[in-house]
Image (cartoon, rainbow, N blue to C red; front, side):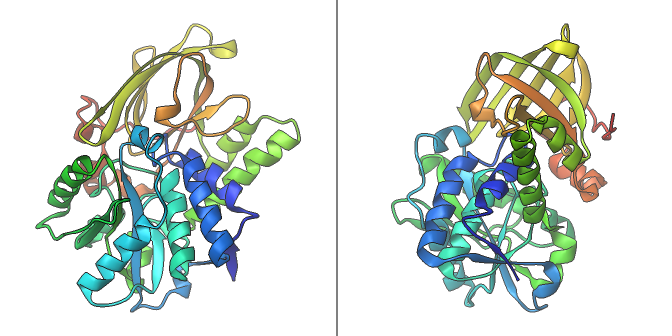
Length: 357
């Protein structure tokens, strides 16, 4: 039996912050909530897909909203459990397992806190293998799993059930609720059976996050290059190392949207990388040429520490290294690209298949 404890929580949070591709919310805030829940309720049991019975009721939980708002409106704690209980009441049965909807930032930690508070095991896997900004951008949708009924909860005790005609409709309705409630709410949705996990989730992503976070930590302790350690763990490629010289960011429609410009230093001097993001990094162009696109991972790390840099954390003068890494192959199918390819987000480019340098 594996557990998430106070001893390995830091590594998981760091690794998940990197896998979150700049989004998913500040992992530090999520780590504080998870740490407090574990202190109060004890370690969280982490289970693989084959440990979950076929008829289990697996409920992914997450936060929804603009990451920029999360920095000023920190969750009170317990919102995910409130959403979970509202969903259980609506569907008429109790959850047997919790799962992350995405392995990114705060949304990797909130399920840990929820599982600890609810006394339930946590599934070692998630519905994206990274982070995405919209509720319908999940792999279970590709096998016909609906993301509704969806239960939403805020920090004031309000709960709302969304039961929509499609996953896209659920996103529009939930996003409107999110904006009305201050751009920061919690959700329990996309209920799955145990026999759907292998086809609907990316396996062992919390284990990957732990290994990735540990690799960065150990590289720092050995005075080695933490970015190189992360790149090796991700089987990724190097896009640019440089200094952030410009960031344009706005909170709009419940999302943090914008772009960043990074000028190369060292061996990358003279090159310029531009990033486009909607909560998460979605497009990277170097000297005007597209070099990485969603749904592959575009990860920004602090060059010195290897810590993840979120889209809301980008600021002038920050020294960063940008990596690309391959997504789960299901995202590169026609159905996956229709959900989360660059053209869905309004970029006039096709998906650029990942190429390791």
